[in-house]
Length: 209
Length: 209
DNA sequence: CAATTAACGAAACTGGAGTCCCGTTATGGG
DNA sequence: CCCATAACGGGACTCCAGTTTCGTTAATTG
Image (cartoon, rainbow over all chains, first blue to last red; front, side):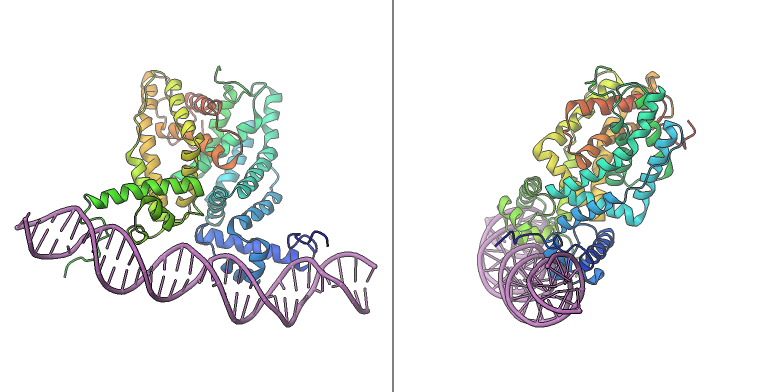
């Protein structure tokens, strides 16, 4: 007798198993965007995915762990960044991308739901953190280039600058009823550039600017 | 026959009714902080509050509308801001207050839960938005004073500056596993000041800085 | 300080989310 | 190509979150 507690989907991951995962994750995304995290019904997800509800419960078990897997999938489909030659241009491109994503009814609702799920389960939170780590790492080089060009002071925490662009957009999405328009995106990018130039994101600078 | 569909708690709001609301809201806060939004059980809230579960279901009905009422209560307990004389000092005080709140195990978990609930129900979202509107309005005057002193350009959206202080702290709370320390608070305040001085928060400036 | 009835609370009840059972499908190794 | 079995799927079952019922308590009014 060996290890018979292997999770379903790990021994024969090809063919049907993969197809089931794909269609369940897409159905889960649709359902989350439509009904939100709280009103998500796994039986409904199974119906949309044209899959037995037993399968969904067996492979994922709970809503939060399904979301964790969805985040793993989303992390793999990271878009490559665009390069414009200037820090402000690059950060505006990033801000616009985030803004368009969050302003889109389906995607915006999905991100809200995914964030809500992450607040409820450590494993899901970990998956969410990994998702954003990847996105931040993808865009950080444009800040590093600005440092190399002397546009931004040496010792700047380049990852923190990227986060500074997204932060106000997510904050508005979650805590305000104001629209997430392009002006908000541009403002976020401009603020991040101004703060970075002023040395606000110097690594390990405990406030003694 | 008159309007017999008045919500329970509106006709005789004194004495017992008020005591029930107080103890249920406290219990709800405790339970949310401990178990998170997804695992909240109204029967458990009733038990903690030493109240019949029928009462909780009758007056609030769902977890999200209980959270909406909790937010109404939280909005009333807004702390007055401190004044230091300089914009950076005031914003650092604000950032430290937010940081201490979110870093506190109970309060941090509660805020996560409340935000999660707001993503699931329009009415709860409205209550959350109102909560933050109040907080922002409380602190905005310190930015206005900086405008009057000439520290920050005329035409600056003072509310947006206050939001810019909180945004990175909430973004870190939700999307990162990095600790919410005082350095993060100071950085948020410094970045907001630098960006505000540079005119990044000029009202209606569609990106043509 | 009664009388009225809003609001509470215990207990019985119900529906559907989540589990279990077992037969069927089809993957991957030999 | 065929076998062993991983993974799926329909349907029966269970259990508890949420509802209903009805008797009890206490807030308000005159």
